[in-house]
Image 1 (spheres, rainbow, N blue to C red):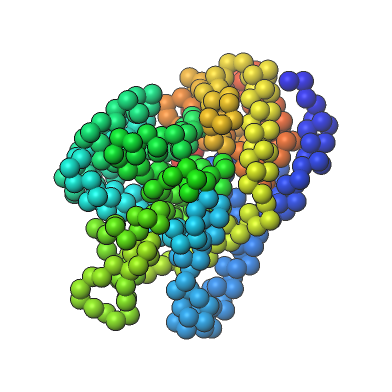
Image 2: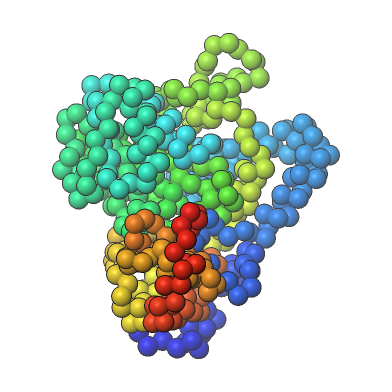
Length: 408
């Protein structure tokens, strides 16, 4: 693709989402392509955090649980996320982490399939999903079976009780057809738990239309909730009263302030709360979700597709030694683009030194997040130009770029 810098700038000028970039704090001269790992900081988050700390906590103190609606935050923010993922407001709640929420759903759902002892998942799934699944099945007397991605549907059998899949693969960006896979699992008698960590806020989702039953998702990636932001949990309405969590806490009790010794689950998805909500983190997540206000998810996805296609075409032309491992068809992928190279780690570190932040995924993948609210066409053009220079000059061979032990 012979696209000039001026043409890339013209695309930015015509971008209907261009104004959303101003909602974020982005360091001057830095191209940020890691929003699929940690979203950028919304400017509004800074203002709201100051108000929460100095006014709500500082002045109102414990009264803020009522006066400033702290106690409602898990449901309130959950309802806002529900609007982004095609769920009913009362089907989503914010709590804990993806890992903890997976444990909650696996152990609760297992009781609905007592005669089916297998939890099926994908080899190469994000490792926390497999780690927590391995512990959860021990707790409920199931066993974990892991098969290659292409064999998942064929592996569904009369023993399969639960199917655990990540909707968009963290490394390649490959996306499952949620509607088709969920339907096949149901036909086989299994419940499906989806991990939406690389989907929510990134790709069009319609959990209700797709028949999704159970899901979890991350708050600090595309939702821009900040480092370690709380996660969310989705339970379809028809399952909410059937599931009783194994991990129980006072906030999931039907009457938490009656201080009863006996556990009585709260109605609906609220029973999946456990401990006291982390208000500062919840308010930061709410600011991140509010950064989508006014944006149409269809427009967000259309821009993601355009940015991906531009990145892929420019990289194929300027960086032929990189192998793109992300699906070319938009409906089969998420909102990041990944390349394989035997020296992906060094290339990633050289890019960071050149002001382009992507990330490395072992053993040989460099990955770039496409975040349409604040990423532009000029950003992509410049990032590929700098990557081409690094590859052409082999500057990635500098010893400093081979030093391991860094997060990215």
